[in-house]
Structure formats: C-alpha cells, structure tokens
Figure 1 (spheres, one colour):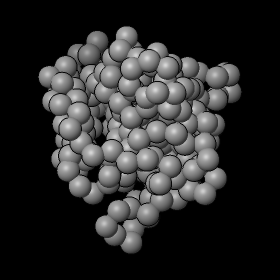
Figure 2: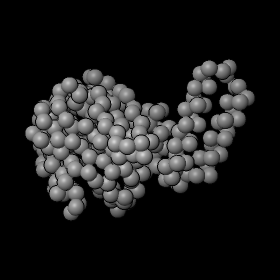
Figure 3: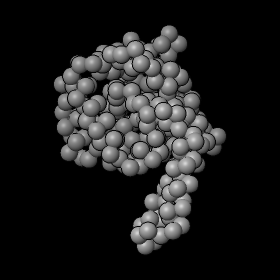
Figure 4: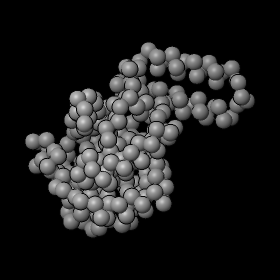
Length: 227
C-alpha cells in the first residue's frame, strides 16, 4: 500500500526548511549506509544529531503526530528521527531494501522498520529525474510529489531513486514501527477507518451503524496491536 499524504508541510514551512538546508553542512551519504548499500548510494546527507537536522526533524514529528491520515495509515508505535538527503549532479540510490531492524539514535532501543516515508522538500519542476521508484505487486510505481507532500510505503519494498540530472532534490526520510506489524491487517484497518470517517461526515451524529463499525475497528486493533 502506497499512500500519498498531502501538505504535511505548508508552503511557508517548506520555504523555512529550504533556508535552513541551504546553509547546512552536508556529508557523503554513503558513510551512513551498510556495507552492501554503500556501493549503491550516491547522495548527500545532513549529519545526524546536530542542527538543523534535530529541530527540522522534531518539527516533522510534531506535524505527523496530529495528522489524521498519517496516524490512520501508519498506526505508529515508534518513529525513527527524520533524516535529510540531497541528490544532485547525477546522484542516485540504486535498488535496495531498507534494514529490517534499526537502533534508535542515542539509546539502546531498536525499531522494526514496517513503513518507510519520504517527505519531498523540492517541487518537481525544480529538478529532472529523482523519481522514487517502488516495486509492488502492481509493477514499478514511480513517485515524484510536490514539496511538502509525503509518501508512505512498505519498508519491505525494493525501491530506488533514479539519477537527478538537473537541479537538486531535497527530502526527509525515516521509518516507522507500527502497532500492527502485519501489512495486510494494517491495510484492512486503514480501509475500515477511512470508511468510518466518510460515514461519520455523511450520517447523523450517533448513528448506530457508525458506532458499530467503530467498535469493530477498535476490537480488531485491540486483537492485532503489539504494544
């Protein structure tokens, strides 16, 4: 399931992010990759744990914490602190799958990567190439979203970033451990929740069928959630 979430950041927030990133210290992205991914990764990244990565990442987490579509789709239990990357001058990331288990920075805690997220920070017209290509049962899905929009997709997916041949592609990326690890169950809950939300807006308050569906949703979540 690929879910596009529009306007996680508004135009003014994107502008402020871009100002911070324009003066930030970037490093070779291959330095943070595993032994296999290092040969496939050709980009730049912000240094983790220092400004502006920390404050920008925290801002993203605050916005997502109250974003109904993100919460409905991800059912987040843990979120890896957002990272930031830049692709330019032919930069790309060849086909790879994200690590299944990651150590959270600054602690001994671990995170199981159920979902991956890419938050685009550059408008599509400002660069050529740079599409995020994700292999799915429906074939290869090519994604290039507006600045401020985010894509949520299974971390189990084989994916790549094609070479950027003009301009620069800026983005934030991170991973989510969900309360519901099983993708099929998580998708069912998302579809049910979206249907409930649509019915809630169309039917009178306190409608019995909406209440019944809401109860079914929470009972399924109660049975499937890993806390």
